[in-house]
Amino acid sequence: MEPPKRSGESAAHLALKRLAVTWACGHRLPLCATEVRLPRCNYRADVAAATPGISAPNAAIAIFECKASRADFLRDSANESAVRNELVELAERLRSLREMIGQHRPDLRRGEELFPEFDAIDLRGVQHETHDRLAARLRVIQAKLLEGTKFSKLRRWSCATLMYLVCEENVAAPFEVPDGWGLLVREGDSLQLRLRPCLHETSLGHRVAFLERIASATTRGELRGLGVLEAVHENSPWGANAAQQTREVQRS
Image (cartoon, rainbow, N blue to C red):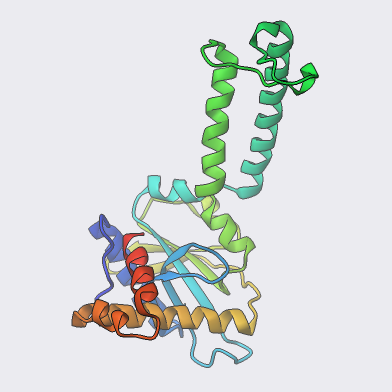
């Protein structure tokens, strides 16, 4: 079955997803689907795959994140711990600076509290180069922590037994690959393993939930291909709620 293409998805990214599915099926991970919402988190895997016999001692579940460009790779590859440390440092520097500004500019205090130390400081309209630079940097780091640490979070949450970065040549060097992830690089019409991943412990319950997500994504793709996705959902026990969830997945 042709992998579903998201709105705005590039042909290069779709090609990597096809190659990831082919590679997974050739490496004892034949139960797979694309665009799978993962248990334990709100992230979606480009490709998710699993071995048959999910309760077996050597059972494995895997996720494949496809990156067709270096910019796309860099957006998700920040180290969560390092970003969090920088965020703490920036927030403390900004807090200290605002206190200092308030001490030197008592006219900026709003006078709404009995004690000055609890009073808010109105910095609107105040031009302070260092303050503006730190505040701008803080907003960037906050966004990065929320949106740019996907690889790091997926590993910390042990979302899969195996995690692979799938990319074009020169998108990511092996030393840049997030800790614990494997690296699959496109060479012609196939993927070559450049870096082996670490194994992550996953519980049976999590593997079963993971497999259910794969089944759900596969069923959704089949129903969409038959042109009956909305009709089935509207007449299912889940009713309008299921249809709404499907529309949200399609938009995301």
